[in-house]
Length: 300
Length: 294
Image (cartoon, rainbow over all chains, first blue to last red; front, side, top):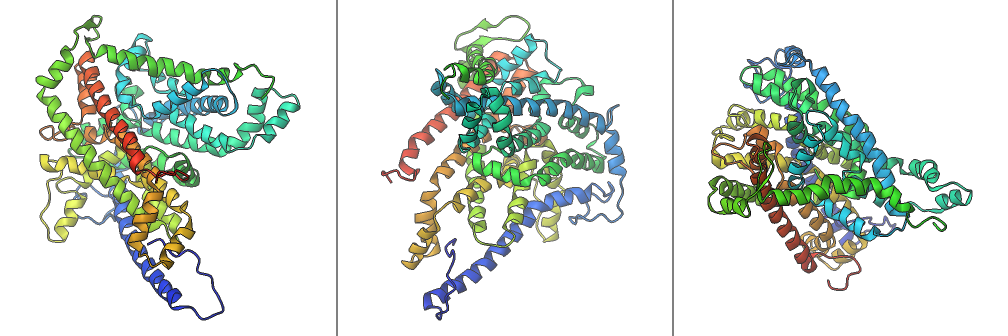
């Protein structure tokens, strides 16, 4: 399978073995391409169909598997934008941003501080705390969810966005801390030491020397957090009860319940709208994503 | 860095330590305590000893069903998804032109997958007159009742998660690209065929990543919620009623916090047991470079 790295191009006539290997390589490449294209189409077609179908009329929706609409209409988007509530889709989008923005900022700041602490300092209890950090990577949320709810209830935070982003300000996502620590460990310390010799304190060193070098890692962190928070459903489902405060995910669920039986294209149009921010962010920054995922390993 | 107080680092990790205590450690202990109580939010928790667990294991048929469904789901989804991810990664791990394009295309479903918008899409694709059935009929087949038939519904949700094999695949691919190419050359000169090379060189060398993916995907699969909640609401006949759905209903619909905590702890115990089993068995099959045992 994945043999055949570089066969040196030599002036001498190719040996029997080299000829055989080259032939194998050609067949192999053809097979691989065919397979990848077929699988790729199966993977992507549902999304293409989704976009096409969101422009179809309700009458045409379930008549053909072909994605291209016969008489394209934007009625789905008009109805979808209005939603089945007194609020527009834009209103829910802004609600989502009110959760996402504080959460992303909090995550970036707290993870940087904590990762710096772990990667650059010795302190009593560091080993234990780091072991706990790793252990919590595997800790299922399901076991802490109920008391967390009771805690936020005591604080009077139900039906606010605070339960959704406040934990992020205290480095609540151990995974991101871990990712930044890994990144920091690979950065040489000479610059930081030079800055310290010149009289900078550790916080100044962090802000002016470390953070600029950390930028690629922090971009990954922000992107993943943006995506996950944008798509989070269970969190808002538990904590947000007023329709006016719904983020996109809950608004979409509400609309399905209200109009699914008849207004299919508006549901699909809303689905497209709900996916658009994530898609845009992904395509703008796919390099960071793939790097982030291959270096740290990501759930999802 | 010399000269600094040895407590300086503690200041930096303090946010994490506080968050850990408030949002993880305390809830962790509290939920264990709550699992031995009767608590409906109206009066304070009342200690009932093992009553919740006793009910779970002896009298609760919903729990039996839900546990069964959950185990079936996990043991179906994780191997299918990982095998597929590894297979595609191996196919991609070649000097193909356009490899990045494919990698991106395969990764997109993973990026969007957590969104309930995708779960909504799934309902349309697998509806009785949905995309998949339209294609089946176009090829002269019989339409399948994907969600209405209790025998199919869980599998349809499994398909949704397998569709999101992208992140596992990207991790596999990174590991495959790290395998020393000279090993392949040596083996092929010695006359080993592609399958033997894969089986005896590639596979052992990437076992750490297989192990990592296995654990992460298993822990995640046990917590699946969005898919069944949106697509099937746990039905038909509770055939997709995974434990997280049951916990959610007990906690946030019936407000039976004690009982919900007990179910959560059983789920947690199962996940822990399987994780420990994986770690214990890893000594026998996971190969770490420089490790003499293998």
